[in-house]
Amino acid sequence: MLVRLVWTPRRAPLVYPIPPAPRTAVLSPLFRGTHSVRIFPDGWTEEAKQFEPQALVGSLRQLNALDGRAAPSHAVIVIRRQLDPGLTDANRDSLWKAFRVPAFEQVIDEAGVLLATECEAHDGLHIESSRFTGLYEKVQTGPCACGRGTPRLVCSPQVDVMRRIAAYAG
Image (cartoon, rainbow, N blue to C red):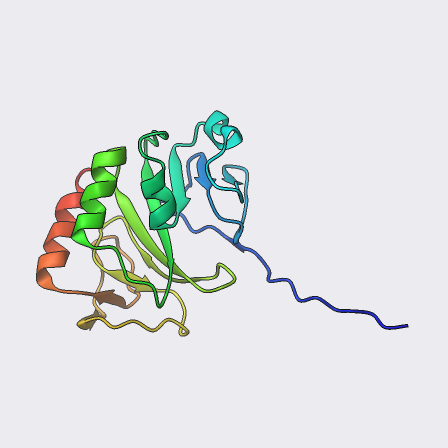
């Protein structure tokens, strides 16, 4: 008798930038839910709407497609794979216009494991895994305004300033 073994990735818990996580709708099957985080693997559905999330998590494409159909009160988190382009100032501006809440960026691997995350200070991406690789202008190793001491990948002084300006809205 042959038994076929199928490897299924272990779903990672969502890491919210400012703990504890509020009522959060995750539009991706890559994560594991908790008491305040619900997974909606089919994206924005009537069930997700009825959940009345205070924060949304999804790809930039998913969040842009919502086109005002959701009204989170805390934040939006854009998840991306490490080879995908990062959020631009134009992306952040568009998300702000659509949702009127701060946007945070997170980089995940194929299984949803967090590789790098943007904190509430919007001062680069904190490196969470040695598997993260990124093409950034500099790595900062000093303490971040959020209080964490992990290394951060940052783009340029102009991006740093814009992110800090955006952070005051949160």
